[in-house]
Length: 75
Image 1 (cartoon, rainbow, N blue to C red):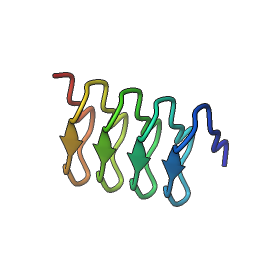
Image 2: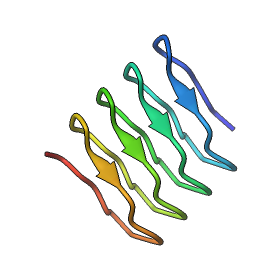
Image 3: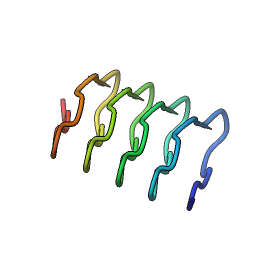
């Protein structure tokens, strides 16, 4: 599953996620079957479903895209 925790209070609830890692504090990943669906910034939430490279890099960013390819939020 390659699910790693790098900081405290990090939560990974991804299902069948590939490289679905959480690198920042208070980050939550609720992506399902997400490929490289990572969260790198604080207070970021990824709720994408079946998203490819659906990453969130900025603070307080929310991704609600469904089946989105490269659906990223940077600011």
